[in-house]
Length: 220
Ligand code: G16
Ligand code: MG
Image 1 (tube, rainbow, N blue to C red):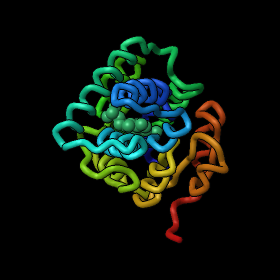
Image 2: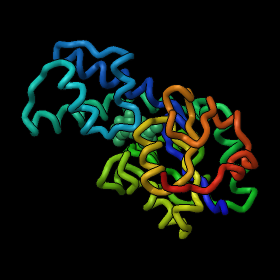
Image 3: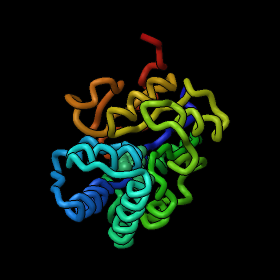
Image 4: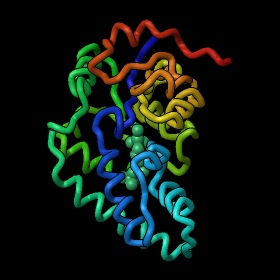
């Protein structure tokens, strides 16, 4: 049985990775080292605090917790500046139509994201009314691959975890879905997202009927 679809935000509904990258690079540069686009791959789906720790380690930069707090706040200010330009044109291919088709079929929809800026982004792209539940970085304490974010979404939707399918672009997110006993559609490359039940390049490449045909989660 399928009752709900839970969507990750960054990399599934909208592509904010480039904005996160620019803001982190600006921070790294202000500290006297560089941060490459390749290194940025490690930050997908990772929380703000954890992202900062990874970057500081890459630059061999030691900071006090007080300094780290300031750095994270500075990065977020730069990031917010960048995303003020976001519009519905930034929605990833097929995302809006797919979410609408899920609702038209009578199923529930939710967002399960690590981002504390989820509401701001959803409003910018005009999709803040498309979800029955929004569980974001302000509501969870444990980061993916912990299943908390997706389990909370199922709880808010009032459905069983086993009746949910998660759409994710990050390896940690797919692990989180599996840890929640949920089916998972990977958005990206099959060679990278090996643990997903199926992988497509975008939500334009899959139909609700194909999602329904994924067999229910069975523990390995
Ligand atoms: C997203 C991004 C991450 C970002 C995190 C926290 O997660 O993929 O790169 O670091 O949110 O974002 P913020 O700094 O806005 O709170 P997701 O789960 O939507 O892919
Ligand atoms: Mg993501």
